[in-house]
Length: 111
Image 1: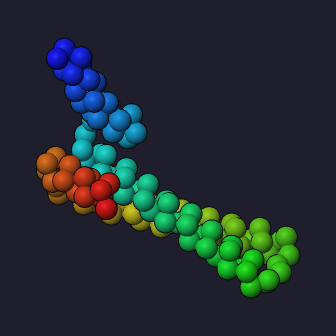
Image 2 (image 1 turned 90 degrees about the vertical axis):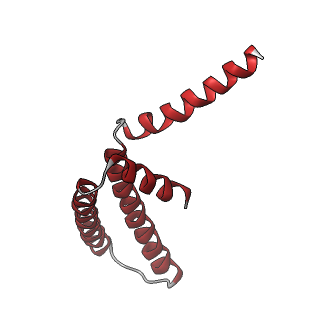
């Protein structure tokens, strides 16, 4: 019985520690904001990978200079998209309570 109680306590501690380690904060609203930005960054990375795959599959040859310029432009657009998402996330969580942030974070993580 003691072993079961220790195991349950360990699971609870891990369940509480993982989000804190992942987001480096205990505030649900800060966690939500960071998760929204993380998802935007992931979307930008996936979009870039899809464009590169499309160019490769279409056998479109571009020079080194053109490829470098395209990467620079894509990076700037990606940074802008992430910055806009960060601003929108900040505005959104400012109007939410900690409980609402926690519910929204849970919804985002379980989808």
